[in-house]
Structure formats: structure tokens, C-alpha cells
Image 1 (cartoon, one colour):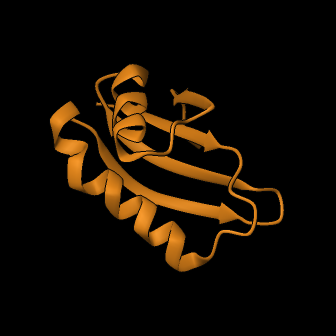
Image 2 (cartoon, helix red, strand yellow):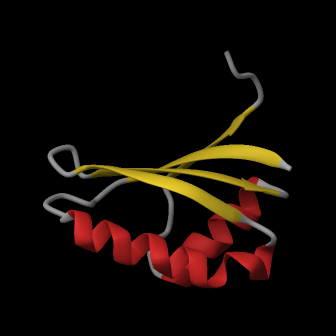
Length: 82
């Protein structure tokens, strides 16, 4: 499985509880696309959320986020790790 980091914009002022709820929405439906969301991080001042996932493709990650109600603006495939 490939590993991905995606970046959401427009999350200004989001609370940790709201981040948890958004992450849970992904987890509920991730299996439909063969994706697993491992973790999410929040920068409320910049309005950014970063998600680490594994899955078959960027498109599969994007579809899960769209179905969960928070489309992603950037997805990067992580091909090397140190």
C-alpha cells in the first residue's frame, strides 16, 4: 500500500474535538475505498489539517474525504522515509 500525506485548507478556528469528529467520519467509510487514515494533525491558526493515510491511490484518499464532507486540496504520495 502506498502512503499519503494530504493537506486541507479552510479549517480556521477548528477545535481538537471537531478534528476528532472529522477524522472519525473518514474512519467510518475508509474501507469502502481500501484506505486507512492513520493520523491527523491540526494547525488552527493557519487553518490547515494534515492527514497521514495508506491506500491504493491518491484518488481513493480524495474520494473518502469528499464523501466524509471535507474535500482535500493537496495530496502527496510519500515514497521515501528516513
